[in-house]
Length: 308
Image (cartoon, rainbow, N blue to C red):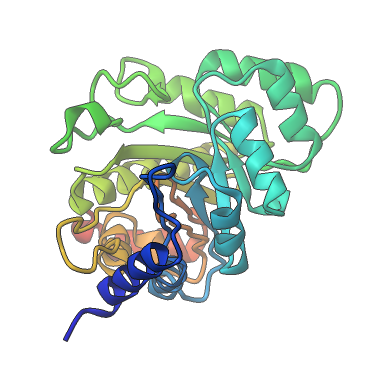
């Protein structure tokens, strides 16, 4: 018996041939398995279901088609954008600002102003971008959740060019460089409006254990910020990275449940009611509420389980 996803694809190709969609003038066509997309989104959400609110966002660069973004929006999946063009595609698909995250290593002042004016979540990629946001915050308040991208420097996956948490990766604040962590903690303590931390380990070729280690490193940083700030300031960990998938299998699908379990081992907070977590099916992942007394006590009890 033919596997259901393959059967759908073969049926689509047969129908395209029967109706003359493919001819000498149109020798190539692209097809989207909408049912498969919906199933993947539902599996992802089910894998991360729990007492804490979760937002999943899909990297627009992975499929820059408004109809695809509309389908994902219907399934409760938001958009991660890295350019003004991608942001416009998300808007065209009707994705609300509350389910949109703006990540880019080179955001202009105009792009940042637009995002902050509409309440879109923004992660600063560098000290220079943080300075731009400082200037914009001086102009007036915003509803945008704001954070900083950090490089936890946990190592390289099997595809070096797509690994973004190495010792020399150019994106984010390199956490283990001399003085970097202390500097970053000061930035948060001085800016109560910085309420999240973002990390991105890589897209494909990254073992789940490496992703979990990065989550653990950033979770510990969030705990330190909250302790030194004397308040529950960081409430979100934004985890970026493409989920590993079995692309050669008959039914390629992100390892959603395995990823959820692995992240729980890397960040004990992700298994508590204080967690706010999200994971995306393409290149952007999650949000986890980082600090509470319950999370802290859980971390102490399970310190040996953290993959660090």
